[in-house]
Image (cartoon, rainbow, N blue to C red; front, top):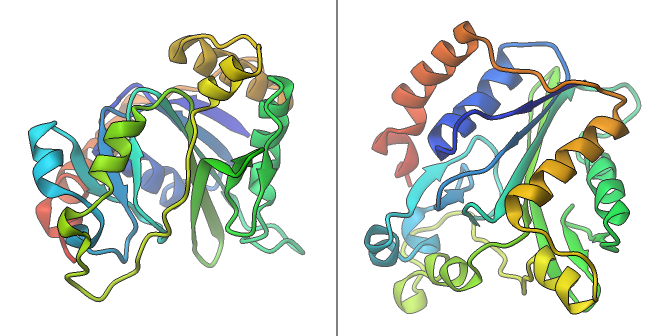
Length: 245
């Protein structure tokens, strides 16, 4: 396992990096990143069904389509995004949810008692979702990614993910809305330490390194960044991809 923390906060770059690590390598990766405010929609979703376009334009919230299916999610600097990429494993279903076990173990080390529900997402006691996930599987490789709500702007999350007039304009995969809560809010409510986002993300990364007995973070090499930038420019930054539905 190699753990990488992205040098970029641009959603288009980070989704391009996920695809590059999935398609261009046979190594195992945990790729971590934090995005500027954006909405990430599933590969089979219609933007107009999922997003308040006027609100997103007004608040400079980018809309980017990912490789995997599933529902729309909001990212900002209060979210930590994780992506597990590896070869398929004999005797293990790629959609079993086993990829979430390291995330659950690390969160429990911070006294966050998460549970995994049937959609392979993570919930707090009281019925609050803190992490949704999606997967993309090829003949040989698996990609599983999700977002941790740590200290996100919940008001902007709801506004961005509420399409104008609530109308369904196109036939496409629909998101399943859920009540959400920030992990930091839970920690504060329960008398636990609730560090700011950057410190928590650093602590989370250190615990992941311990989990996998890894000493150092890996870096994207210059040639990797060049390939990712090309993919970002030609796919994840283009309207033809992001607004294809």
